[in-house]
Image 1 (tube, rainbow, N blue to C red):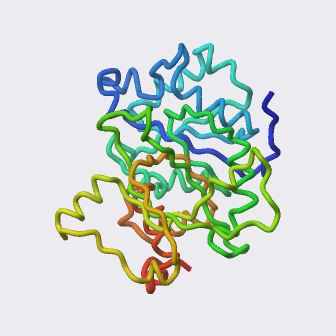
Image 2: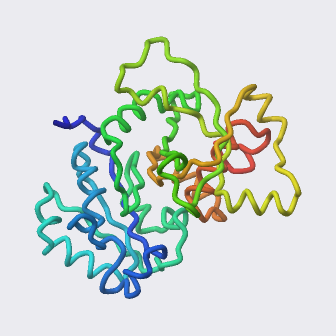
Image 3: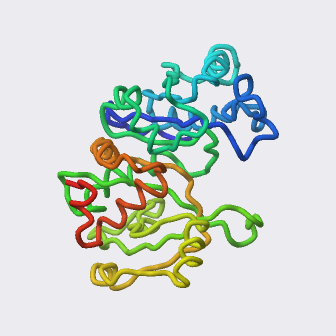
Length: 290
């Protein structure tokens, strides 16, 4: 039986209920049938991230959706037996007036309505979250190691999840990410057998494979700054990992996003530039990362 982990009361979850472009066969009319309500094993898709949050006692949950899908989601929360059976309090639905089906994920976090509801450290989750990773393990890992991720206990770091796409489960044509990672300092106390610590790495560069291919095509090579190797003598390059779009962010990251209005994507821009700022000379002041 899963045990609930005590979480700080200011820890909250934001679940992005997007348009579902990859599910356009099912979501051709998002006003009536948004992606979040597509049934998976007889449950609406959004039930899974909601249940994942409740299992770790996160009850401050907000579903963020375009106004066109708001009514359908609110009706489902009130009437669908799977959703009404979830523990109380019920998740809130936020539909910012300027949020469209094409708004970038970083832009969503800059919207005034979203900024107004975030009061502390927060999770960002997709509405199509279906995973076997226990939420309590992820949150415990963040709380134990977050300060060490960027080397300052005064400014806790973040945590994201990537998973392998190779092997027997390889899906031809599946989107992947290009990652460069470095080892974190070894803990003085050995980790327990069920700890995520052995799988914890520092991301120092990340982009989608499509972006990598564009860079390679235009420059005929992949340029790597020497500063990366001055900071990290040994790195690992991963080409078959995929971003699960599960992020644990410290509250201060909202200031970082606000200071960089050109950021459009959480995955490529927020996480990508944050990763590079940990080793690239001159990038911290340029990004107002202080």
